[in-house]
Image (tube, rainbow, N blue to C red; front, side, top):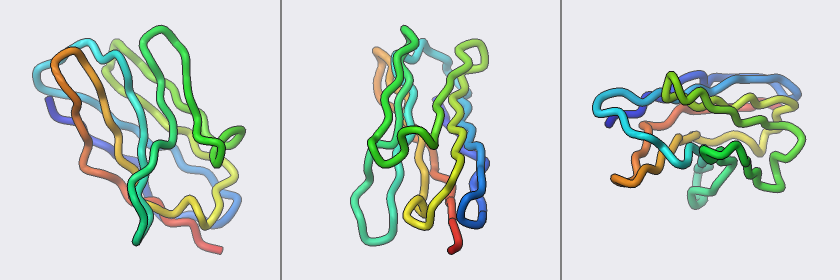
Length: 114
């Protein structure tokens, strides 16, 4: 299974970006699809997750600004990021979890300028 993340870029404070992460290869049923991020000099942290039953989770720092969604038919997860802040600057990684294991994407850089 390979995960391909895309959609990162440079945006001004208050702007928006939409990240996508699609799975290819040996396709499985993914119980959980999520996004993590790692800022320079910091540990990787959980941003948001979407489980197969429809429930979602958000870190407090992004609640009300980010929306995670998944398209099971396309094995794709999205992260709509609005009202971006400089502190959102990080490499964003997608992670899929199935009964067969955990899979990570390669990361996509999001830079928010002040």
